[in-house]
Length: 271
Image (cartoon, rainbow, N blue to C red; front, side):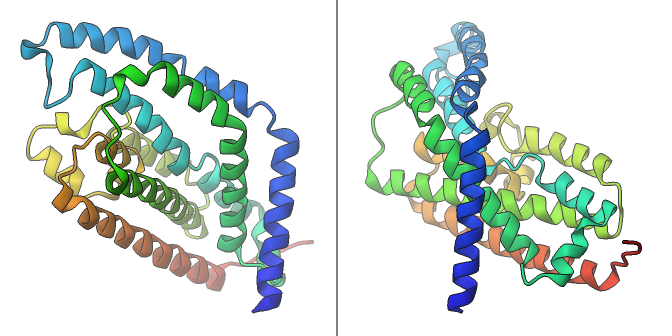
């Protein structure tokens, strides 16, 4: 057990060092990603100015901007660019065999690499995030209180875990279908709409809102923002986090099953 912990700690340190070397562009890149929010401010200000009562489904022009900023924060935790396609590439090109002969777990290694990625990202990008949120502070409601804020932080961490194991499961499908590009495109399309990244899910009419509510995608962007903005009733707060935890456990089990089943059917040839 001690040896395994030392192995994972060594891997994490190496991953952190690698990303600190070549990720110096994080700060500027993060700041540039916030530039489209200027367009969103003008767009939604005009939309709400023409709306009756200046509210839409409980959102004002101020809270909709706060919502978009919070979803960007949520997506920074839950997005896993290149994870699924990277796994599929390793399967397709035979690189996956190194995890069959070395005492290193594929999912464990990839998880540590993503943890290192996020730690470095937020260490470097904390300045741009703080600057943008400070400049847009007037759009946010008062501090929601420690209980809600704690639930918000937990939802971000669970969003990271959900995003990782969900996309890892998508990538592991490559053991059966070597080319998963089309599958990933369809997933990303549904993710963009159903995670609440494009617009608040509250805007959806029934029965579509109820249908999307049953999917795990809302926890990747919409749910953390909804918690912070008080869109989740206090009596449903921890219930929602428990359901999200259930989705995380489901995709952990699914990814493990797909990995082990894939190993059993995998055949590698050549040097």
